[in-house]
Image (cartoon, rainbow, N blue to C red):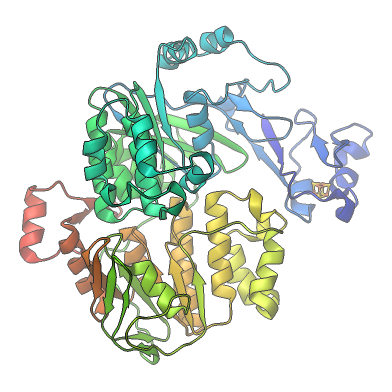
Length: 587
Ligand code: SF4
């Protein structure tokens, strides 16, 4: 049996535990050196001597150790491993000519590592992290698959690639200056004019890059990637911060690009991934421990197998539960006591005006906000939260716990941050069980916030917002950077918290599946992006969903196997029938 032992060094604190794993290991007790003490005061586990008894992962007080038995077929060297007792990636996805290959998998399972190898940012080492492996040897190791020819072309600089990173918020660190200057620099295909128009970047050309919103940064990063002349394009999470229409526009641009090139896209929004991909490769394993890519599948089959948690061709069950979505506009009976009321108000800027009609928020109810970007949804949240003032009309000031769209990593550990925001609540069993454990934050309490991944940071900020003592909770895009499984958990945690603590929660998000699950009622923003936004009073979920999708001009159908929403092809029989009935979502 081959096993992989991973030690998360940022969690291990041998001075506090007094080398518990080293002292408890039954192999060590026989005099052999299975767990040894290293100079950096962290343990090292010999995977050949380890019997997988399970004592050290269970007893480590900081949950720093994972020991996992690998499937038998993985009796091979990994494609890459960075050091002793670290994550192993066992295979790579294969780009296909004239195709968009979608990649689906959990955070921390090796998707970005694989893209980094395929875009030549890092090189495979086959588990030999002490020596540099020659490019010839790497190419030879992949000679049995299309990857051999691909890597040979890449290393010989015969293949040109273009890459859009996941962390678009880091863009202003690397590129200074005006948007139009960056576009001029990257436009090797002479298509910037078309892309500026399609991606609605006309209004921001004269702005500095560090003044852009999340959605604008995302669209600029996509433009920069698509405007480069390349044979292979790698696009990591293009949907974050984009509204539904922009997601579809980006998907269409990417599909068009793939007519003469190869494109690989990593994405967690299933409806977008489904719409964008010609085929799918799933990456499974154990997050932060090991990852392996499946064979290529048709998109529908791949997504459905992923939701099932079972890959029949590989005979692998990688999750012990299925993910199934509800079919109708189901809404729990919630207590309809009014928690907060606001009167008509507006907010005027030099070039933008937001007009809001009066509305009510109820105890135990989640009010979801949808609408195109640039219509003032975040401004609305900031005004309710007291961060921005109204221009006309006054609103009652109440304590609001607000999670902004842009979340910034602060100094200190996760635990220190949560103790500061939650106060006494942090000690409550309910909080630990229903928020920290459900969001899997209890395993990263000792991690430095600055070292968290985008998805981990998002979950910590949601947990912090839910722990702050307030009548209203306002969450701006809580699903960004979070994988499929965790999106459902985040939605469940927010909903349960709202009901149990009898608060009123407002959520802005663009993932329709997430909104469908979480919303009791909806506010739909209308208007002209960047110029004027207005919003009428809250609607029930069904009416709200139909209204917003009618404005966005998109209909969805349900997959027969698991009810997941799928975007209809415009003009298809279903699309036309649903439009006629006025049922844009709950067909
Ligand atoms: Fe202690 Fe856990 Fe580190 Fe082992 S891995 S030394 S048990 S903190």
